[in-house]
Image (cartoon, rainbow, N blue to C red; front, side, top):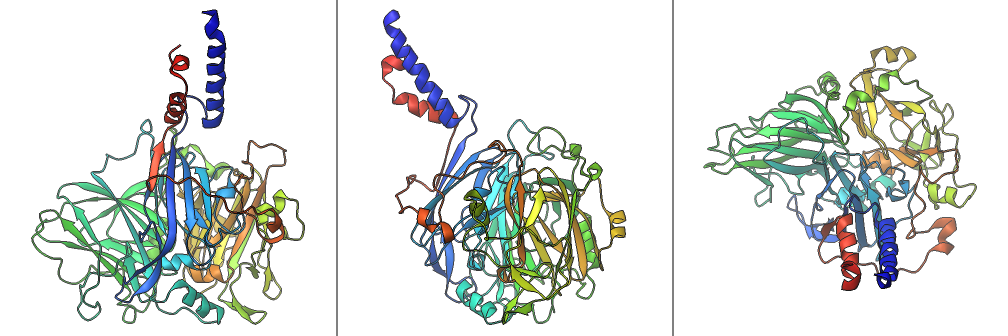
Length: 597
């Protein structure tokens, strides 16, 4: 037996290093691998041929179906003719803003280059989406879904649905994103969209005058008596949409990673960048099809009638086409109170668990002392240095050539200033790279004050925040008396109505540099964003992951950019490998005499 000791020792050492590389042996979180080619595709969703952005030839892109705590490895080949970044809306990237996919943290992937994202969907569940974050590219596509399922050991607050369906809704122009950029660069508004797409397709021909013949439309196939979870993402440019299914109730159960108090809606306003999931029971007469509708909100109904997305809900035993007028939208063009009250009605299911077994409401946000307050006011576009720009607190964000987080890593000075005002800037509007200095483990109150004429939605990367209040008029200190301090829903995107305010609370426990922006592509492109810097004063790598080995460099750090090297490509577009599988694969490479000691 003594002769086997060196072999046994070698085996122990080998297994030790496997455990180091892949995490705790036999108990590590799985890795999901995705191999994406981002390129142009010619389609005609509204009957006019145009160039869209596809992933692996798909428009929209694939849905990433993963589970809490999985590690995602996404290998992206940029075959566009311009730089690219992919951002993961609502995915919190715990301790890892390096993978956020926005200009504040990442250099863009150059045209023709390949780059691999790696991050963990740590302690998350729910419905999210990804999209290209640069230069209005989302207006041309490149988006897809992220479904994060509960682990089997965590109870879901409703019965298992009979199917899971993802719908992408959004306004659409027949012009490509580069032409839309030119419109904004020339100081003009984008105007009225040409239509609304549902899953990248145009409307069903419900009206022969409004909808041309030959348009390809989406069909959702269902079985009578079954219940489906339908996840809806507004991936559009700037239009708030009302979503409804003819003769069917929408039981809201989740939004952007939080289970909600379950309640039925006949229709729901879904603003740009927002995601919801509903349970829909197929309990209607199955002899005909039904309309699925996404129509523009707060617009002149007569002029915007053609800006309506229509898909078909098709029962398996249906014998007839959907017919008659579309189900009516809310009739409140001159009064947005209905929509605001609808938004207020969405609350947190504090008794349900989510990614962990403890109830969501165990984090009693209403009893935490606020340490920082920011009132962020936006206004209609203004002219700065001869160009049309949008602002927050009078500052129009100007992205530096060197990303903020990368500049910090290399101790570069002069890239940005850490002086974003807590209240609206009193002087003339100006360009600036001014950053919010967030206090690590602080509790920040942010009030969005919308002095523009259209709905704006705001998104914070790296966090879920609590939506605690909204109302019309100017926010004052007394407005805090109206806050919901018990079951305000936790999410990553919230709407702010024109002439109104919305208040959120956020616990700054995620170290990094995080993008706070409007999701409306036109106002985002023109400068309505800021970054929040959250630094742990202790020198430790436990609260933030290190700079990845494959980091790209640009701006003042361009000298560190290495030549592009080939990346390993999987045989299919996606695969899942557990830590156990990795260990088994390694052991298969060992001599049999080692394995069978």
